[in-house]
Image (cartoon, rainbow, N blue to C red; front, side, top):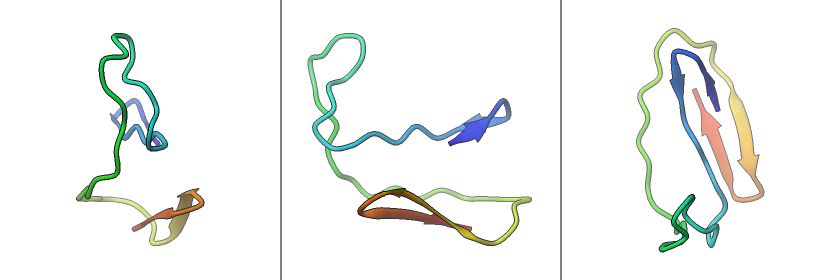
Length: 52
């Protein structure tokens, strides 16, 4: 999610780390501060939603 000004990469749990593949993604808590956006929500998968 994002653009040239900033990017947030979200991947499903269990996805191998790229390019080394020496670790896998795991669930974790994330705090993101948003500024200059319109209020709303976006589903980022079956179990997660980002709300501004």
